Image (cartoon, rainbow, N blue to C red):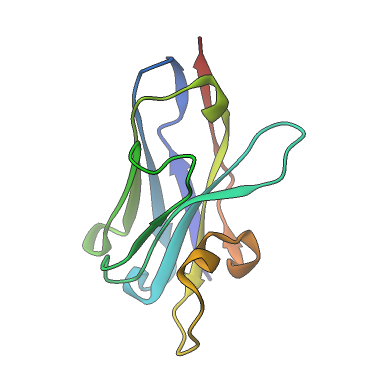
Length: 130
């Protein structure tokens, strides 16, 4: 059973940076896609970044491209999301999620769809003030 625990959230001023971590246990991380998602009050959950099991492919939403960087260390069972140039609109609860790799192909952008991830962490809050 996959367990995911996020950490690293907090409050920062606009223009600041934060790094979120997702600690994964219960499975072999190298078999899983990991995605980072966020949800602001009153809004739908949206995918911001995804990384494939061997870190060969990284997908970003248009809203964070160039500002956020996803990375993983399978040996340490950890996936990170480095966030820079943060803006108030980045304020949200941030979640990491896992999906086991299969032989099925899907368009890369589908890796940002919440429905593709069956396992989720509890989230960590990021608040950016202007």
